[in-house]
Image 1: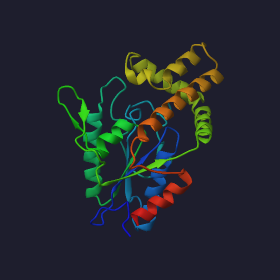
Image 2: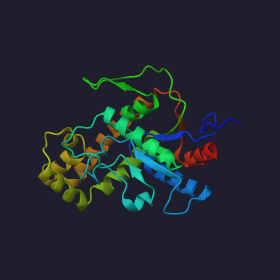
Image 3: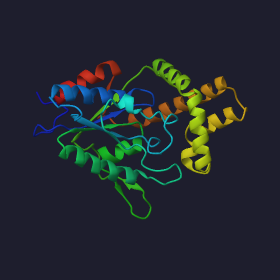
Length: 261
């Protein structure tokens, strides 16, 4: 039987794990990497797979809690790329991401490991799987492909809407601990509020909380609403792609491992 996770010559496809914010993409990528390491007989600290983040917020240095980056403990020794690439006041385009990710895919494959793309930024993902080209002057993208490139296996994490909202609430309550205030103060002192990175993350909400304009409870509710709107936009984007295999988080790991076996 032909496996979706293999190319026609039996090689692993690049695994892409997508879904809305808070759906568990990074955790799934780490779980798959660790299980593949065990099954394929790699000896730690070497792992059978390495993760490339496709998150347009995780690229910024110093924004850790506010962008929900995985901690070193959560990574469990699995190498991660695409994180902390630029400062919040620096420009980083989708063309930059595509070039970066393609280079990392090449390096990971040369090490004999599986590249796993994990993230919810639809344009970043599409630039890879549809092989977008870019104008040098305008940095605008286009693809001359109607179909997804054949060397990608794209898995979408599917949650019932009410369950996803519960996950977003739990994450928000965890994020609004004292450490986020310390991170906000550091970021605010170092970078300009004029940058898009400062406007599109959690920090404006934290600023209003620190300034006494809103309570912690109000800040949490605002952040949940902001995350929910982001999740809906992400789902609208990804649902246009008929090649994505949508699975509940509880089933995704076993499916991926079967396809890659």
